[in-house]
Length: 479
Image 1 (cartoon, one colour):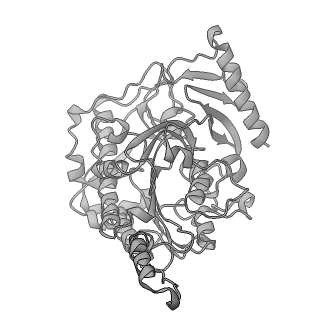
Image 2 (cartoon, rainbow, N blue to C red):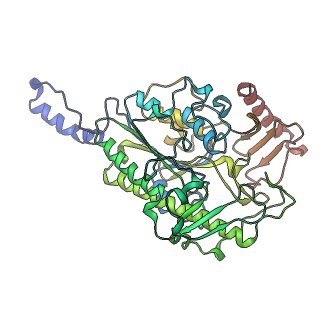
């Protein structure tokens, strides 16, 4: 963006005034990309089905040097939760600043602007209204469900610009002859898993193209005279786990620890059927981790652009996964869409100028907090129609007082089917079907959520407190 001209009257350009100007020039050089009001740029990075299997969250095996690089500049939120652990409902929720019960988006079908959102102003749409240059490349809203009024530039991220759904990628990208090997989870596994090892065709894939175009649009925005809001939507590690073979070679299957199944039923599928075999589970883990490392490579290209253009002092960078993902845990389940920690818990990094960095925050936060947070940090007029609250206090001090629960739902037949309530220590799950018993877990003592405490007398007071939080939420939102 162009440097703001200084409007000092000639009559004041005496020696004293010149010394004053020399004193403040460094401040102007730092702020030169910001319009009046010092509004920051926003780079909003979304990864599809990325769970917390990342080194910055303590994972000992996955290799993501570029996520680590971003985490070194960011606050890492250890207890962030999506409001619906499925692609489109989650994205529409945090991009509208409203809960799924309000958006009425309960699946991946249908327009992102649901009838309930006909008057809503989505997050990038609001930034555009406030004078920002807005652009998206890749999967930001669900594939084929874009909201055009949000953007000055909107692109699918595909090489030919056409909508390509994820299962269509091998054929539509012309990669069927480039598949070196493929695999599929055996057994009863929930969503299952399918992966492809590709020959050296990285540049033909969607995420590298997305990274290139995002980098170009960041540079265009930085030189365009307006602050920018650029959204980057990577597809991996969503199924199919389709990446070049060298990313698979980073992980030796025999060194991957098997997922711990536990003595709990699978959230879906046939519990009488066996879970996947050990070899199949290790192969699937390897494929998922390879897809995560592939995404990380593309993230690095975008971060290189941030470095080259020296944008860190005037740009907020958000990186998140739209929902969590079970990797063969909880009875051998692979997938999302459950009310449990691995499905609703999500990675969230926020790097903001002048805020804390290279630190974790253990406070419970929600994705509906993102919209008011970015509005607050960028100095835009606050909106009264948003759920959530600004995370600014936690970006200033990750240990600041914060006493808020997180609420996540799943739906069946277009109605909420379960509600999960997460607090600092506990997780409570209740079901619309009264035949299903409530669940209460101590996440500190039992992070895998194996021991249901709902019927334990010694936890009656905690159960009552969690039931009260759930009832208040239902009364407000379940209509």
